Amino acid sequence: QVQLVESGGGSVQAGGSLRLSCATSGYSFSGGCMGWFRQAPGKEREGVARISTGPYIITYYAASVKGRFTISRDNAKKAVYLQMNSLKVEDTAMYYCAEFLCESWQYTNWGQGTQVTVSS
Image (cartoon, rainbow, N blue to C red; front, side):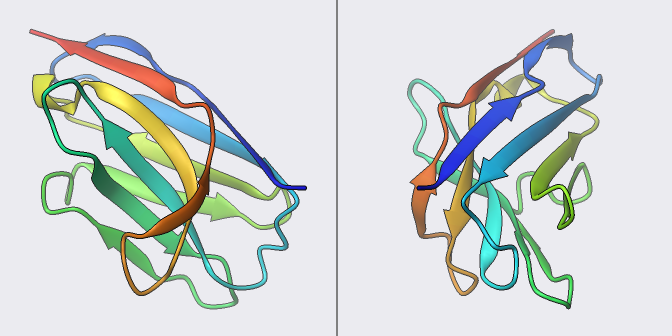
């Protein structure tokens, strides 16, 4: 049984910051990747960031968030985080924590999502 539960979303002004958290259960965090994708009305689903869960930390970011977002994880807590800085209106979306393949943006499981709304 696996489960992903996101939290930390909310409404912020452009230029502000939010930190999303993903609490997991049923994941070993001994390999593979975890990460985040987002969906917004009128926009295609977009992989945002993913991170390896093995002994070596490797991160991947969408070009649209590179330099602004930082993904991290805590293997002891089996949690994944997304620090979002310099938020833009176009970052408005539902953000989902997911189990990703490490070699692509394909994912196999995801949570219920947490809404991020950025206003001007």
